[in-house]
Image (cartoon, rainbow, N blue to C red; front, side, top):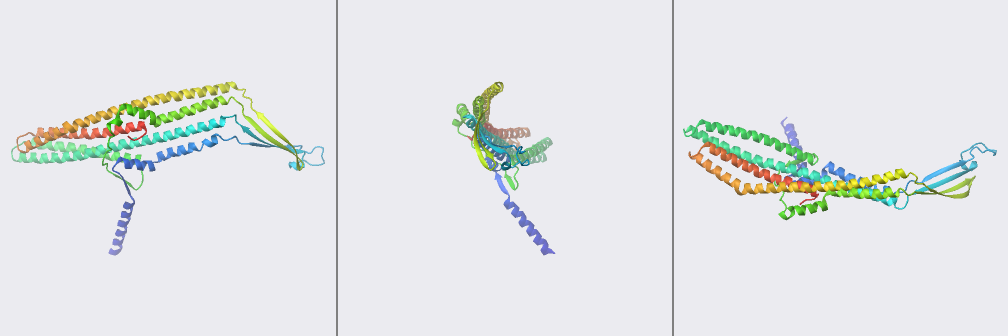
Amino acid sequence: MGTPLALLAALAAAASMHVQAQEQLIGGRVEGLLEFARERHPEFAALRADVESAATRIEPAAALPDPVLRAELRDVTNEGLDASPNLLPPRIGGARYTYSQTLPWAGKRDLRRDVAATAVDEARARLRSGWMELATRIKTTYATHHVHSISLRHLRESVDLMRRVAEIARARYAGGLGGQQDVLRAQTEIVAMETDLAMLEGDSAQASARIRALIGRPDNVKLRPPENLRVLPPAAKLELKALEDRVRANSPLLAAEDARIAGAEKGRELAALNGYPDVTLGVSPTQVRNRVAQWELMFEINIPLQQDRRSAERREAELRLETARLRRQDALNQSLAAVAEALAGLQVAQRLEGLVTSSLLPQAELNLNAALAAYENGRGEFAMVLDAERQLRRARIDLVKARGDQQIRLAEIEKVLGEEL
């Protein structure tokens, strides 16, 4: 009995190793998440399909209308002839066949093609905008997850430190050098830290779940913990004037509005041409018995008498163009404001990081070391150690949040620009 059980256990272990071997490990850096999402995310794939769908409508938009084939049967009752009614052309009085083709006024087909082409440009701009929206959500969630990860590490270090302080407090109390209140306060602080630790672990797990959703909830994929944040671009690229110029040149939102304006302009030209008639040409052979007796040519033109309708169409096209231009101006204003706001937030976070790293954090570390040494040697109070530890913990949290906020602000700027900095 032992041999079959051992064999089953070996097979199960081999199957588990095979599954783990097939499991893909991604993450660690945000660039890997972005690359994976670009290839696999269904929302981005849908936007690409929209572009392809719009491209397929260009040529049909300029196609000629379908030709018309008409057959007229004459004297199907064979009146005056010694024959019964019939529907076969050789056995009736005659048949006339008409083949006609409508030809739009010169320029209409080209304008219809141009209107369809602007729809493709708009779809491409929406593709870029959709990708930057998705990429921004990935970047900001990754930055938040990174903040959680570093904060967890610092908080665990604080818990270990406070446990060490609690041991010192108990030793002092046992030796008659300190009160029981120090021991109780240390235990209370540890419990409070462990509560914060549990809440932070929950936030980290939620951020990890959001990242998995943002990359398309793939199967057989395991996420690495966040490792490093992106390096910020040089200061020259973060000047407001340079960013505003890049917004005007590269913004996918503005590109979509420009495509709408171009489409509205072509639509206005097409509405003007709709006041001109279309022409229909046709050829008609007439069959008598088993031969073609004569040929006829046909010329037909529609008369554009409904000028009220055409005037309304031209007015509608003018209003559509005006609306597109106004929306483009509003989009530009909103984009410039968003860049300025995100840049201001980025600069504030950079200044905060500089203050914490250059002054607040070193002073907090020195203060804690001094308070801890004094308390161990019986020359300090527990309250001094507790205050110093809290100051250090707050400084570390401020530093981590400042760095995470810089990444979030950078992602917001890149979203408006439509490109990486």
